[in-house]
Length: 106
Image (cartoon, helix red, strand yellow):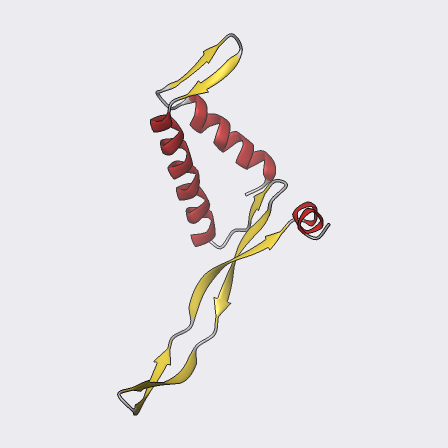
């Protein structure tokens, strides 16, 4: 999802949500409408990641899908070591934008 696609989705969500009105050129959003917009945006981001796409969050960073490799381990329960296997899994990986990196480290 590119920056332009993200902006279009947010604009469509805001204007298509009841509880949003323009007053003197300002957009007013109710708490219920804001919650609906945020939930829908997170759903769209999740679906993009499920499809294996990278999601660019303008001025924040980007999200992409990474692979968490399978591993074997040992758990100690009541003094007894129990072996276990963890299967390979997908995970969301966040890479922060340079602007955030600089702001946090200045």
